[in-house]
Image 1 (cartoon, helix red, strand yellow):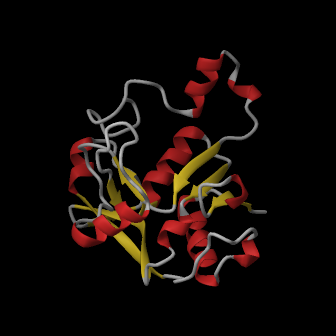
Image 2: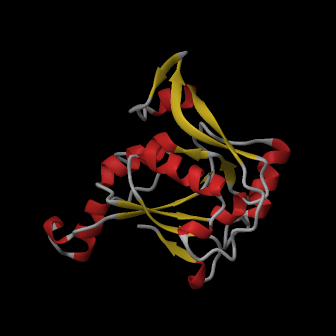
Length: 196
C-alpha cells in the first residue's frame, strides 16, 4: 500500500524490510537482497501499466510465457520490461542484485522493447510517480533492442547466450541500476545461469 499503485495492491509488506520483520531478525543481518524480475513485465488485474502490450503482440507474449493464473487461469497482462518500475523497486528494497527470469520467452522476437523512462503530461521523467493518478497518465519511453532469434534454452553460461541477448541484459542492468546475478532460460534448475 505504501509503495505501489494503490488501490491495486496488497496490504502486505512485500519489501525486503518486511521480510526481516516477518522472519523476526534485524535488517542488519541481511547482507544481500536479490530482486526477481522477468525479462518482460506482467500485471494481474486492474491498475496502471505503462509498458502494457495489446492485441496480437500481447497474446503472443502471454502464450509464449504461459502468463495465466495458476489457480484461476485468468490471463495476465503482458508488456515490455519496465526499467522505471524495477529501478523504483530496487530503491525501496535496497537490491544488491537481480535474477532475470524467462529470457527464453523472448527468443523468437525480431525486436524487443525496453522501457527506460516515462513521459508525464509530455515531460520526460526517469522516476516512478508517487501518485496513482499520475501513473495512469504516463507514457513509456521505449528503447528498441535487436532480438536474437535463437534458442537460449540450452545455454549454460553467459558466453553461450547470443550477443543480442547479452546486450539486452546489459541494458536491463544499466537502466535498473542493479547488477544481474542470475538469468534463467527455462524452468529447470539447470537452466539458471550465474553471472559474474
